[in-house]
Image 1 (cartoon, rainbow, N blue to C red):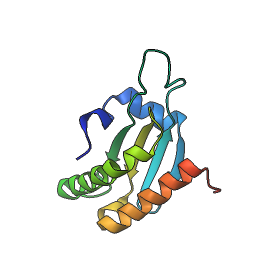
Image 2: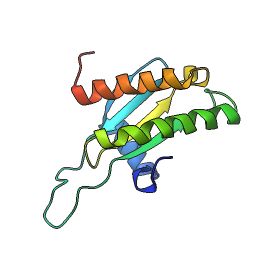
Image 3: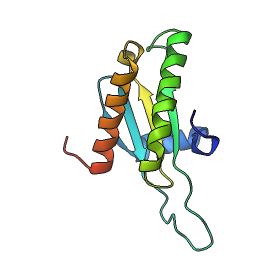
Image 4: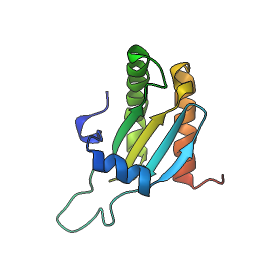
Length: 123
């Protein structure tokens, strides 16, 4: 499970990540990444934690399928949060193909999208 301090909850934070962040698409998901705060190492303050949120619409499937996809994505992000810059906002939007994708396919798509966003890979 993703720790509480790493969860994205506020609507404004989701909007910031989607509108002002970079985007990388894969067959089963789209990842939006807004890099860390303007000055994460300001005097007297520690770097804020990286936070991640998930968007799984009804197009993915019924309630059982949507919750399964969310659980899998949360589990996958738990291991990857440490590799992201401190203070980053990440929104993972599941596409309809995510409902039929297995755990390994979701992991592969998430890794490829994050690598592209962090490495600045070519489109």
